[in-house]
Picture: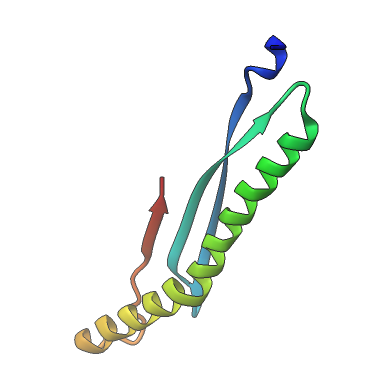
Amino acid sequence: MNPANESAQIIRRTIQKPFLYDFTVVLTADLAYPEIRLQRNPVAQARINRQARREALQFFDHAKRTLYPDAIAAGYKESQSRDSPSGLTGRSWTIP
């Protein structure tokens, strides 16, 4: 077997996206995902990296569609219970 095909360099990529509501951060989505470098197999490298990035973007879509509205609703309920019009508090979810 070719030694160049037996190892890969793995780089940690991170994405952070704040979600704002009325100019207040109510949710911060942080995500780390791997990116690989293969010396002699660019096709496999591209396929693996494309899949990892796709899964990362799916998480952000979930954050936008589900977690963000939940964070707004939770902040709104908290502000209503304290009678504070701007009582939204930030929420943060991190996927290791």
